[in-house]
Each structure stands twice: as C-alpha cells, then as structure tokens.
View: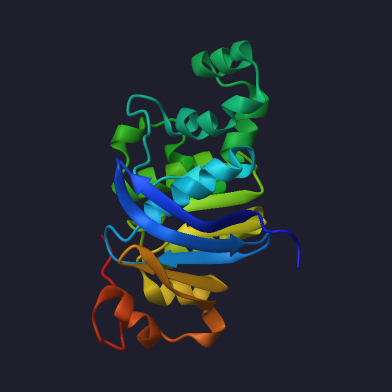
Length: 230
C-alpha cells in the first residue's frame, strides 16, 4: 500500500483549549473514501481541521458553515475557490466583469451542481440547499486531489445529495467526509470511522458494517439508525 496521506500517532487534538480527541492514532491512504460519523461534539470537525493542516496545498475544503459572501453572486462565490491560481489583477477583473475563460470554468461547475440558472444571483437570495451547493462548487473549482467536507450535503435532499457526492468522488482521488446520515455513509464511502467520548471506537470497511453496528456511536440501539437531516 502507498504511504499514508494523513497520519496521526498517539496525538491529542484540542478545540479552543479543550481536549477533543486523545491518544489519536490514524492513517488514511490516497484513494480512500472515508466517512466520519459521531454525535454532536464527538470531534468530527476537529479531526477534519487537523487533516487539513497536514497537507493544505492538496485539499479542497468544504466547511459546514459555507462562509459565502452574501452580496456577491453565485459566480463570484464559486470563483473564489480559484483565486489562488491567478494574479491579483486577473481576479480583480473577474470581480468587475467575468472574463470568458473564468465564466466557462465556473459555468461548467454551476451546470454540474444544477445552479446554472442562479449563476448571477446574489447568494443571499438562494435557499439553504442552494448555498450549500455553491460551497461545494467553490471546493470543486479548486481542482485539488483531496476533498474534505464537513457535512457538505446535510441540507440537501437525498437524491440530490447522492448526485453531489458522486460528483465529488469523480473529481477527487481521496475524500474524507463528516456525515450524519449513517445509511448514506455506508452506501457512498468505503471506510467508516466512528468517534465517541474523545476516541475512535470504530474503524472498518463499510462493506463489513450494517447500520445497527453503528448504533452505539450515537448511544442508541435502533437497528434502523438514520439521524435526521438538519
């Protein structure tokens, strides 16, 4: 197997001075599709942040809170993911009036995430789900090999979320997602990591798991476990 892309050995991860994950040992290799599951406060976001810090230049980042610029259009918010590839003058020109090449690149992304008809609408006029898709588009246009997403499809209906996740997998070699939908995690990812009480309590191939195997992570015994969408 290739050398790990991410690696932790007996590490402590904190958030605002509070210990979140203790004695963490974990390896994630190139090409893996990993789901992080666990209740609120279990450390999923903290772990994603630590992963991001290990190789930031390779990572397309899609946070739970999109951080979009409300008064700017969908076009400009998606284009922000490509700022690092261009000069300041090129970026300023696109802010004033989109240049043909930039418009083509962003339009292709918008078409893929079904926002082509909202391309020049201010994002504060979009629904919550459309804003989440805009955030995904901003990550996709970065053209990085690794995608890290913190519940990137939590506000999107099941059919559209599956389409978007497949798009993410098609465009990235390695994907790590915090997901709250256990059934979805088992369907779309090849490996599931469960977090609880400051530790990894489960790390297994999804093909070897059932939803009932994950119930203890959420402190329940329901074999039809499927946390509600937020």
